[in-house]
Length: 345
Ligand code: HEC
Ligand code: HEC
Image (tube, rainbow, N blue to C red; front, side, top):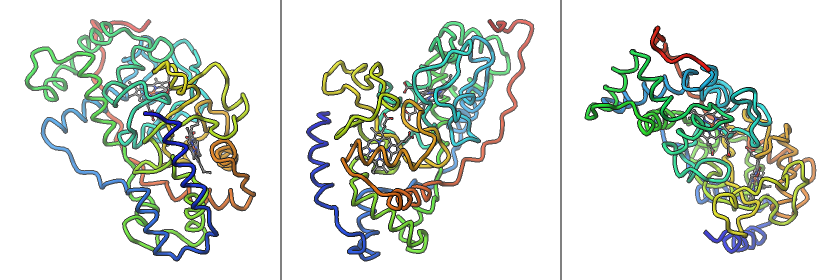
């Protein structure tokens, strides 16, 4: 995608739409919101092999033995009870190593067009096998991960139920598919903003509606739109003005590392703003603990706008309406290791 061309178009239209908020009647505001965003669909209950796949994926998601140290599960860095993040600037992985980027939430990740800050994985299946093998995350080789699960007898019937047509279903690809199937259940429907998008005028109060209007009028929705209020496109961090090196350190060139195209330097996936109050610290560096500060940085760096304190607080009030019902996940009882299970290293 030619990001800069798309962006200049978007920014022009954003600039033209800057008008006094009060000019919009409520129903107009709702119509404008419906044109830019969509509610999270109500989850449906899985049955049959889908259900078996989700159950298996849930166990794998919580199983620390999927790491070389037997100490790090997906849930370490994407805690389901913490908005799907670890609340650290950058995560701590194998041997206490720190990665270079903040862990994005797994909640509603299914609605992102691609995964990772630079979009290097096309979907959740492809994404899930990354951290298992990443030397600074879970650090286990593909062969060793498969040997590990083969060495835990309780996993055999679970894989057989999830992949009934396969003779030897314990493979890295199937591990990825099962974890991805579980992740698709990690959605947060029914936020006040979802109820508003479904036509309930009373779901947002006046201040929150003012914040929504300001979010649209300032141009935020040019990038943060769709079901995930983000997650749908890439954009440079620093369209109008480069943020300081604290937020945008020169070494991480973002999507450029994937495409090697100069126009993708410092381009990142526009993150979802759903459940944003639950997922500090912010930005790919995890350097901002203050949502108000993040909103101010966005306005200046992405749109060349200086928002005053009250405008920032009003946008924040809208962003807080994006917190939905958190998934209620029963902690799985994992199959035990035996004398033959490969040992932690
Ligand atoms: C050591 C911490 C750590 C562990 C363990 C870990 N992750 Fe991540 N995860 C991260 C970080 C950091 C990123 C962002 C990396 C990047 O963009 O370059 C990420 C990105 C993701 C994303 C992309 C979300 C988005 O919006 O782009 C998903 C989905 C995800 N991880 C799921 C998983 C799953 C599933 C597992 C277990 C198999 C897992 N993670 C294990 C730290 C971790
Ligand atoms: C030109 C596209 C664009 C526009 C316009 C834009 N953003 Fe962003 N936004 C991004 C990108 C890209 C990031 C990721 C920055 C990074 O690399 O950390 C981001 C990050 C954020 C974050 C941090 C999210 C997180 O999980 O770390 C918040 C909050 C945010 N934007 C709010 C806003 C608000 C409010 C506005 C309007 C004032 C706005 N954005 C306008 C593209 C945009």
